[in-house]
Length: 229
Image (tube, rainbow, N blue to C red; front, side, top):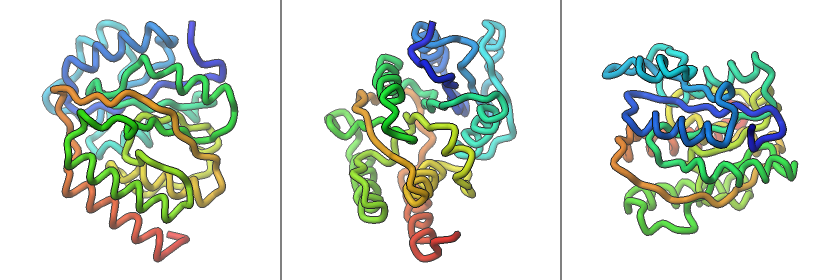
């Protein structure tokens, strides 16, 4: 049984993920077909996820290239296997499977091509620096895209197949999600948000507040100056 009527792949990029990943997979499988869940191992160095493989979870290993590279590999798999939608989730337990019905309802309503999980309605548990950088980049993208976007750094998303087919991607780190968003907006794709829980736990985050924020800004400036880049 699955929440999603269009054929949907749940895609989870993972790099040295801890026990949170196993718990996440079990929670997702309570709501979505297990065979339609894919973990892309982005060249992890401290684990090979042998326990999860032995438990029958689908894990594809690739050389370490960054979160964006892992997502792009998963997108290729989704296209090759004829999925209609992809839902992306992080491996650190900060995306609640309990919010999957929000995405399922938005997909069923057929109003959007790219749906972003918005955490900014409740930021009490969000680290202040993450809150500040997210608000700044979201403000910048609102100005750039003319869309009411509030959580552009959220990795909890639903993406229609057509977006994966026609939107070119050039980046390979956390900035890939920003690139996809800007290019999709420019291509006239319908972009919306659904509210999701704001969760910050003890799971290790590999995002660099300084380096990756600089990547976001550099990407935005490049696309702003060179619209065909």
